[in-house]
Amino acid sequence: MTEAERFLATARQVVQDEAKALEALAGAFDERFAEAVQMMLEAEGRVIVSGIGKSGHIGRKIAATLASTGTPAHFVHPSEASHGDLGMVARGDVVLAISNSGEAPELANLLSYTRRFQIPLIGLSSRMDSTLMQAADAHLLIPSLGEACGFGMVPTISTTLTLAMGDALAVAIMQHRDFGPEAFRNFHPGGKLGARLSTVGDLMHTGDALPLVSEDTAMPDVLIEMTRKEFGVAGVTDDRGLLTGIITDGDLRRHMDGLLTQKAADVMTRGPRTIGPGALAEEAVAQMTGKITCLFVVPEGSRRAEGLIRLHDCLRAGVG
Image (cartoon, rainbow, N blue to C red; front, side):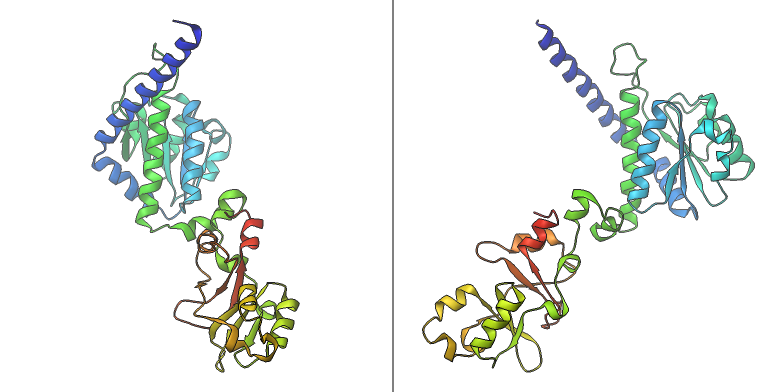
């Protein structure tokens, strides 16, 4: 076996070992998990996550995932907690303490603090008989299946299981709270993810920027409006101000013969495709296929245009 082949064999074995461990974890969930979730849901304050070493690194990720999905949470380093950061933990909070062995001495002061001030404590460990689990009010037990390193010392399988347990907590809580894409967007306004979660209402043009004409507007005036607003289209409204049609460059070409003697109603395409302001911008991009590069924005249950979104606006915002 070549060196490269040994590397590949090791990689496959590590992933297979961790996959088997995750299957074991999936089969081990019981009412104790539901109890921990309920405890977090009932917390009036925040979820305080703490752990040392690799458990601390995973704990930071769990706290970040909870916070980004609508559950106020932050990480408190157990050593810093012993030097003043216990003040960041208050009544109304719930503490999630993580230790694979359940015997991390750095957690001692934090555990004592939760007991002294009746702060609910959730323990996450692989040993039910550990100091952490004996002190805890709720218990998240991960299977003790060794580590992927081959000699049981390098945190690999245990940290993978801990991370999966944290993900399970976050998703269970967010589903209970009906935390959907719109709520998720509020916590992720930046970057590519924020762009993907932008709504049509975030990107649309409104007010005086809208190219709107009435059905009886003479086509020379329609052309002036289309040129002035620079969208290449005009929305056509009836005498109540409701959108009844759209005029595009294609409509102009199709009615070139005698165009300037006609009115907007004679040239427009009736029943134009529209989209609601609350729809994701990605949905608008999906609708703008072929020659369609603009959509008028019409609230559900209404026919009154309140905006216009262009494909260019979506692409410029990073959507698409």
